[in-house]
Amino acid sequence: MLNSLAAAAVPAVPCPLQVLLEGVPVFEPVCVLPAAAALGECPRWDEQRQHLVWVDILEQRLHRYDPATGEDSYVTLPEAIGCVSLGEHGGYIAGLRSGLWELDGAGQLQQQLAVNPEDQAGSRFNDGRCDPAGRFLAGTIDEPKSGARAHLYRLRPSGALEVLADGLLTSNGLAFSPDGRWMYHSDTPNFVIWRRSYDPITGDCGPRQVWATITPTATDRGRPDGAAVDAEGHYWSAFYEGGRLVRFAPDGSVVARYPLPVQCPTMCAFGGADLRTLFITSARAGRPGEELAQQPLAGGLFAMRTDVPGCIEPRWRG
Image (tube, rainbow, N blue to C red):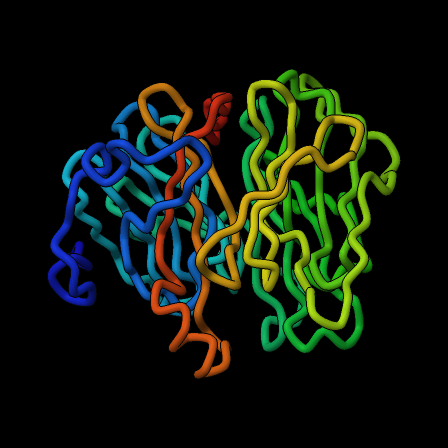
């Protein structure tokens, strides 16, 4: 059963996205939904239904935001949901704590596709998405951050999980170049983004190469969280605890930084009819009270217009 977030948890009156962004300059973020999410993540634009799907990991919610009306609804799942991708036939595939699951169009669990092979007391699925051929990839998080026990997996048709990367703390930042020839991947606490060659037909991938490293400072612990790639092949990364989006060129150089009114953006996704609206999720869980008092929109869903479109998100083919 869907619940109305606009009625139940958000004090603001829902407003169509077109109205909220009217007259707003390109690259200026606007809060389109003051959702107060504990850990908002994994926005996915559904180009067929023209709405945005996103999750609140810690509240165990799968959300659906309708930009035409400003309304947001959600379904609560029995465990934490780290990532979701659209299914080719109307449902979803999602990474939860216990493993990978198929969901129906209403977001209800249908069948478990693969079990999380790690110690689920300290591991859950985190960031994930489909490759250009519709294969689902998802990584885990080592919640204690004590042993680099997280992995990046790819789901095989048999239901087996193929390990693509190991020795991780938080598998994140998964994205593909527009032609599918490059796969990007980050380990957030280690301030690193990797790139590796990828065959979109066979799924073969080359060795992992450091593509970008971020140097933290005493006053800036911004690090690469979730990401999206635009039609020009630039990689957009949400910098958790950095209060900004960073746009990287295909050679790994930084070409732009876009500040946000919250300290912890988590992921971005291109959407809208022209794919030039960038949606950004954020988090408020675990943040200091003083910070939250200064940033009341923490945990909100943001949007900003861009001058370059994104790409249509591949769907899981099952």
